[in-house]
Image 1 (cartoon, helix red, strand yellow):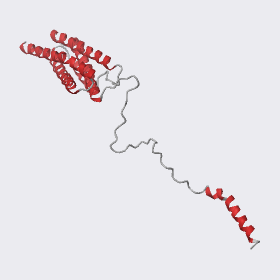
Image 2: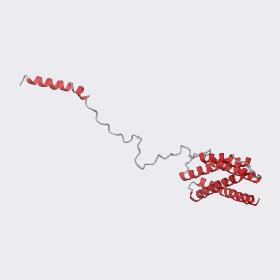
Image 3: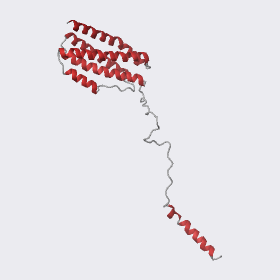
Image 4: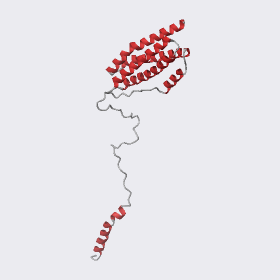
Length: 205
């Protein structure tokens, strides 16, 4: 027994020393997921992150921003159509009316830009695809062929602008946006009334 103890001890010592050589061959345990790490997958039903205003920006609620976007798109269309009619319409009274539309909606755009200048609202400045197609279609007409299509398009756009502004006045939450929308109502209604008078005059002639 006295002669076997050193051999056993030597064997244990050799085993411990050689442990790293075979331990490296053992696969690593799966890493524990980091609950704070971001992934591409989002839980079901989770909405996109809300974009908060930058420091110094005024936040405009989503519903009020939607109104401003619709209003801006309408203004861009009215200005482009009005310029076409002011240059190419056959009826002098319609040309003057179209110029008035351009003036009114250019003023709306300037006022709205000032309203949102220090806010998180991003408003369109150009026509969308459908609007561009409509402007292109009417731009190919001239004189009397343009008068009626332009008047129809203008009245439809003006009524839409009036309806969205009325809805903002009734349901908007941003006081500055609501006040601005309220200030446009009488101008929009006046343009609709003026268009109706033009239409009656055209029917009598």
